[in-house]
Image (cartoon, rainbow, N blue to C red; front, side):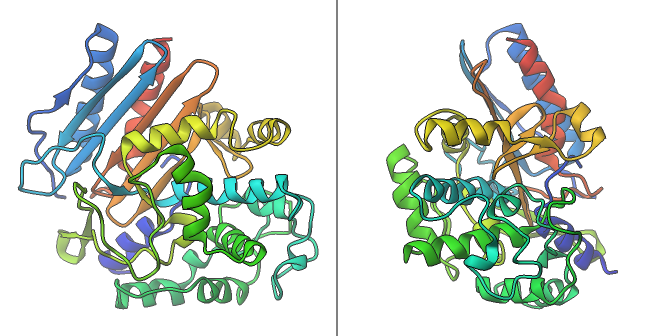
Length: 378
């Protein structure tokens, strides 16, 4: 397997879980003031430097206030440091938008969690036995199209290719399911793309518009959006993304078309707005009280090891390092968002060299190091 194939496929899978060019640290932007905050920031910078990422950003909110730190650059060689308003591609954090819209449709009586997916979409393997809830909590067993050689080869051949959701679903449905419906946790991007397609069919609205009208505009998330399939633009200021290609060469992946991620991973945002979103996601206002409670209670460990490390998955929401939110990865970008509605702790981390030269997911690695320190502050 070529280095190019390995790198892009690993990054593109948007896998949920914990998982040689080096950028200098530069002068970090530091807003922490207490010794505990400085300890978090020092650890953030140490891990970011070890990972060799081009740039990274950490935002922490607690009941006592907020602080942040920047490492490296938005774009290699420019000296422009990341900020809380830097726009970046958020990958699978997009799944929380899709899940929330679907749950709003449940609240509105347009669909039910125990409905079989065959009521809404034809030709789904085991569609009579797979429920909407199983799509949301990653327990449908449907094959993930991002594991397909057909998809990987086509994506590598043309990084600007515009993918339609129906193409992605066709690839997935041509493969045998990974497991029986409801049998076990299996992270599949097919689940969320199918949910996005169902939401469009139920409402007669594009998913881009559904996100904007139901989520972004009411919450004032002006820099957060789901671009249409052929739009690879990013609003200024934005972070460039970087991946390793053959021969250990680091290349700019900023404008690789992310339409293959769509409902599962194509949105863009900023650290400040992802923090706002993580807090809205874990509090009241987006869903009915009963459904929100069910959503938060739905999170189950994805494995025995993950349970010990605070990683789980529920109804379009994850437990990440003991916080509720999600993670995301696209070629060149890795991000982490999590919030604890009980303590008021919210953490957002992003990095723009993903996966790293040694195959790590940088934001997740940073989160594993700093979140325990942050939670000690409470």
